[in-house]
Image (cartoon, rainbow, N blue to C red; front, side, top):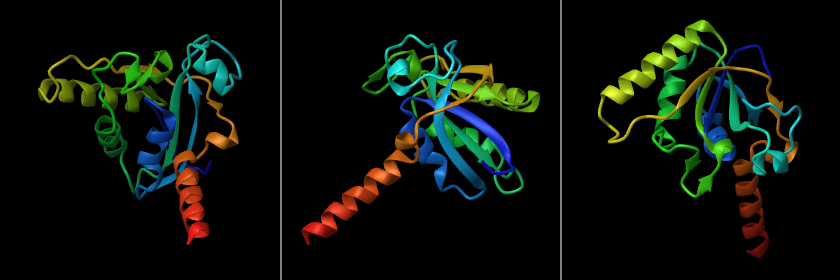
Length: 164
């Protein structure tokens, strides 16, 4: 990663989460991996087996002069349902939990205020269950998972071009 600040979010499947942030102005780099569990160096299958305690997360490196942490949080809230406990859509399990891992005390304050403001807005009928926890060890998922949706789209376009 480059030399910007980091933000780490779990919002269900990490492929979709990463893809939502990838092309935003001010985002320097993105990756997917695992955080929040108690199992060192997990594989994708370890996390899927629900033995690690980790969440699938996207880690974003960003330039705060170009995009604010508040703007990143706005994207985070918009890409998933923060009222669903340990699931998003068809994906179920604690690895898909809604979670914000903060890297600084300032991020904790901003994330907490953002969550409170969203809850008070009455946008959701149910309580927001998103966790806000300190960032811990980040375990990078293997290369096949990085920018997965972008790679999948490129393969689909390539396959289509071969058929023409």
